[in-house]
Amino acid sequence: MFLLLLGVPVALGHLYLWRRLVVGTTRPRTLGRGIGTSAIIGAFVLLMSTLVVTRRVPPEFGKFFAWPGFVWLAVLFYLAIALGVAEIPRRILLKRATLTPVAVGAGPEPAEPVEVVPDAGRRLFISRSVAIGSGIAAGSVVGYGMTQALGAPQLLQVPVTLNKLQKSMSGFRIAVVSDIHLGPLLGRSHTERIVRMINEQEADLVAIVGDLVDGTVAELREAAAPLRDLVSRHGSFFVTGNHEYFSGHEQWISEVEKLGVNPLRNEGLTVAGGLELAGVNDVTGKSYGDAPDFERALAGRDKNNPLVLLAHQPVQVADASSHGVDLQLSGHTHGGQMVPFNFVVPVQQPSVAGLSKVDDTWLYVSRGAGFWGPPVRVGAPPDITMIELRSAG
Image (cartoon, rainbow, N blue to C red):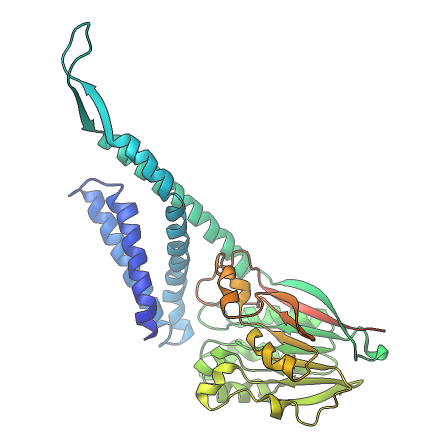
């Protein structure tokens, strides 16, 4: 079903590129058209193979398909956008170039009648110019997006005032990281850099809010191993994201616990100075017999104390606010990852990224430290966030 839902738009996208980049820029029955058609078919086969293979083989093998396949997916996406934007001026120019008046006859008087003939040369020139320009634009955007996705996450400092927080706890710092997405394209070095950046901040607490992995424990154990080196005054905590359920959530919950990261499975605890921390399972867990349970997670809490909730998806803030949560820390959205998806995310989620408020509950959404699919981020650089809690007093 996944391949069918994605395969149809991917096929239509390649068909569109074929018409604009091959049919529109070459003459019929020429070598150029044959080569271009073969290239488009090959690109489609590569991408579909990537979607199949990377879900079924270990990351060390899947990466040989994932790198070219997912990079091409990003190029395909931005090429389609660039060609779509250029469509109206292209059509206007082609219409003007379609017919050129040619006088028939000779002599001092205007020749009659006037014959019109197609200007095929100008049409090809216009189509080729648009194709080249679109290719340059798409390639430039994807190249920039790769530097953002594969570079070090931004380190953000975000103060949040909690009315119930004791003055003695003002300045308590929580390192928030989400959507690390270890898999065929991101491995151990990615985890090591994240751990190093967090440890340099000397946080009071570390919160990993889901989507740590895209693969099984057997495949990615070594990639996740550096998490054992996380250092904070009050420990590191983890809640499931939707991708954990696709990757074997029970095994991963056990694995992160072995690495010294405490899973919060619909449960909570008092950290220090009356600050309470709770975590709920991702909403995807409902399909795996592991649904989020706010009643269980918040059972026995002291409502006079401030409560910080870890929940992978921002949409869970609706339940959080109804249960009196003071601050929810989430991820999932990637900040849209690639413009213009940042305009699509609000259809499903109450926030794309950053700090906002829902009723009396603060909601902070990280853009995540990794990526999913294309190793490209445009308009949504990766981040690790230091949340600094402040007392209203």
